[in-house]
Length: 277
Image (spheres, rainbow, N blue to C red):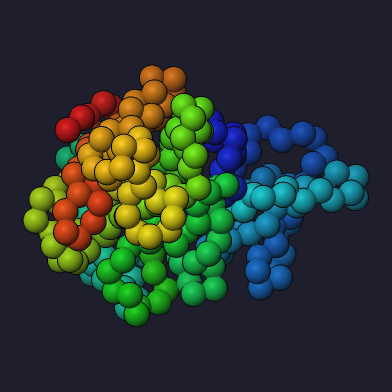
């Protein structure tokens, strides 16, 4: 359950004090240990009341077992945002935040992962860290606040698996853009072409490309001596295969050419229904 369909997730996200396991084995207890060495012990398998990142230890008859490569991340509730900001961080207003007739696809996020200079490199899956998804706006403002759907991370891991299965060597699936707050979506960089209902604001979208040489540019996947939209199409086709195998991860796939500022890339999301452009 916690590892996702790919089996490669290394973090699970939940609201504080929420139930994370139904019907646990009788006698089994769980202990949460944070980086600040604060301990929380529960018999009902509820998440800690304090937002943070926790190591999970299971206790049975006095014996402890650490759940390796798995962290529980408790998030700040959406209500923590006041007047469009959390602390010094401008977040903005979500599209239907003040509308009682809120479409299911655009429900406000449940909450935010608090990202600090200390935990920004926390691994959340085999190939990805928190830093891969944080908003690039307000570079000098800390803490930062991130919305992230674990299904997106799961889908990205499966895209890597699919590309590898097809014979492509994938050393680095780079994320050009992950989460964007409504404030960032409207003001940061060049907002032209960004949808007012962008999935990036809901933490379930990413713009990605393969960057095996860590140069900030798409790699020549088809080995034709030219980096172009054909390389992006290879990633998009892999994403199509993932959706065909795992319909619950269906969403948008968009293919974009390169320009003077960036190489070709694709948009991928897990909005819940198929969209193509």
